[in-house]
Length: 366
Image (cartoon, rainbow, N blue to C red; front, top):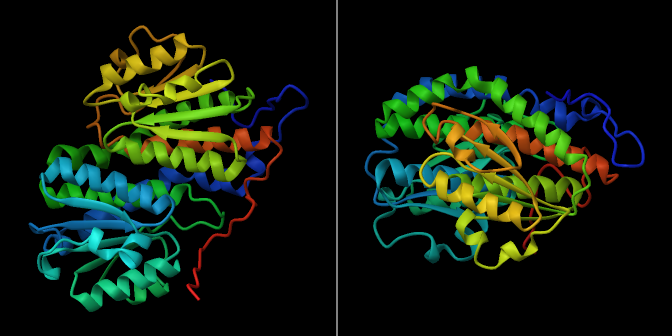
């Protein structure tokens, strides 16, 4: 197993240690943040039962990483309940609300607003608008003392998810665990709830996968493609965002079988294709990785079970074997952080100070 603090090279000089990065140190504490979030979710489960009680439509929203988190939660919620659960960017609820909100009564359309900082201007605006229109609102954040939390009816806080770094790492993983556990409890899916509670025990598997990501990040790929289907589609998008914002490397995210419909043409030496598979469709999605490898791309499959990797010649990591497919999702972020931050260092970027970015986005429409 590769030591993530050991010196790697990009073909010219040793890369700086990841440990010098605040972003990496915060990402590396995600295991503890996930455990704290699960405890908070269990404590809040009974109080939130009414919020999730048979809505006509449930809307989950955020911006940037929080929007991708919303996509994961919405997809899991649809699978668990069979209900109408919609993920939308905050901006759509401000600029084009009719495209998100259904025609039924507002009281039957709860809105979950996700924001790490609790200060993102669009998030504050959406909570204000939704409450004024009569929608029940739930805020999920890492800062209980924030403008967003102060204006919400209900607040869920990830107790150890708050960060100083600009890019989201442990905040995403912990808020995802928090929401998945609340949704599993509200839906009465005890198998998923129990497996989520076991997830902190499996953190070493995420660490082992991150070691692979660290090694791959030093190899000088020109492009990275991340594949994920179902609820993992939002996880793949978050991987792509982490790579883009920290290193500006060309990165794409696709549903695995959709990758075959055109985008697979990018496969060649110098391209890394990552597959987040495990659960329904894993065998079919694994075949896409094999095709990418046959076309010259380097491949990395992060699977759930050993039979996900049948016939695959590339890098393989197993994360969450035996767990419910959706219970493993928060464990899939740490490998992304290792890959993205190492790629950034190899490209001469500073992930602690990504260009053009700040920790909180304030949008002034004027």
